[in-house]
Length: 312
Image 1 (cartoon, helix red, strand yellow):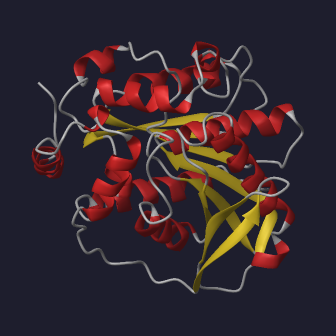
Image 2: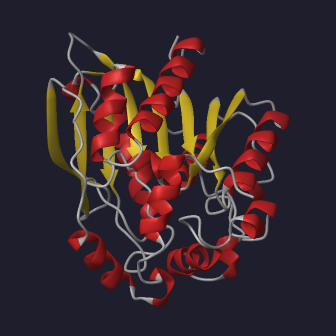
């Protein structure tokens, strides 16, 4: 029997009344989410929040949202990639959590509105994410940031992109990354762990829905085997940034997140893992339902980043 926090039970009761998203077209799901009622949340006060368009290719641009905490700076930075299975999500879905992240960690948070599948399949969302990291590194002075202390992180597909960006930066001698913060990340498109079987239906991210996301993201099975899609399958995970891996107890992605943490540690990477008891997939960007749980997770992120003394 699943161990569910009361907030998670209430959330799932409502979530499971909706239509089966994996039976819908992506644009229809996006429109449904846009029209869904949103709970009012208290937004963390910051010195400044601004949107910018940044170049990610010869003639392509994506939007980023820059959250600047109060204080003098230059501030350490956190490049954030939102979740949504590479198909859903945007700057708004992660907005309240990114505001709190900036306030509690006293970091500039740069949230990246990478292009979405299936209109833009792998590797385009990853390429956008990596280009955003390079932009942040190159323009740190312009946004009152410290280029020597950049953390990458994200939830779900955003956690996947964070891990993949870390691999890309290592493999291509890209910007130095102080740490990677992976919140219930996708680390393998195998869909066959014990947690997939235990929580495959009725816990917010059904197995069928995760398969739907994966099929929209990749071009074929060759992509699924790529370390930049399934970092758990990477042959070499050495010389990567320290990692904080956070998983939700009642989540199909729990076991692959923990497995990735174990494989990182075996490769000599400094790793801390955290299992959020009683919680389900998606809680981190659902401030209206899980305000205290999000605050608690961000407090753990803040403590982790302080204790490893990143950038020093």
